[in-house]
Image (cartoon, rainbow, N blue to C red):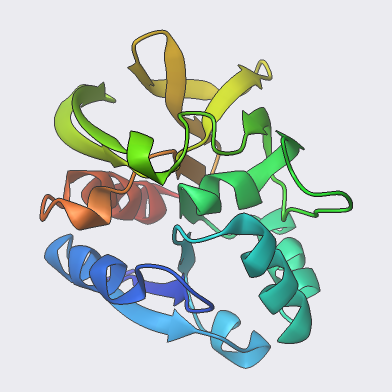
Length: 192
C-alpha cells in the first residue's frame, strides 16, 4: 500500500484538522458521509464532537451498521474524544439508549474530565512519543480488557488505548499542529 486513503467521518467535529494532520503523516484524508465513501477507504478517523449526536447522525445517514460491519471486519480506525466513546464496547454517563460502534474492549466515561470550562492541555508520553494533548469535555477510560494496550495516561487516568487495528485517544491531537499521533496511526495501518 503506497498511499493510505483514510476516511474522516464527516458528520461533525474537526474534519479539516484531521485531514490536514493525516496529510502531514503521509496519508490521503477524505471526508466520509455515505456508505459508498466508507467502502472506498483503507482506514477511518472518527473525530471529536458530541457522541450522542454522532450516533444519531450515523443512524440518519444509514452509516451506523456499515461502520459497525467494517470495524468488525478489521477496518483500522482511530477515534479522538467522542470518537473514543464511539469505539468503546461500553460507556458510562451516556444518554438512555445511546449506542456505539464498539470494537475496543473498554468502558469509557463521557465528559469525565468535566465541562467545557474544565478543558486543559497537558504533555503526555504517548506510546513512547512526547505529545501535547488538548482535552475538551474529554472522556477517560474506566477499565480495559486483557487485549487492550494502554498507550497514555494523564495522571492515573487512561487517555489512549489500542486494540488490534483500533486506536483511541480522549484528547484532540489534531488541534496542536503536531501529527505524531496521526503518524502512529498511519504507521499502524501500513503494518496491518
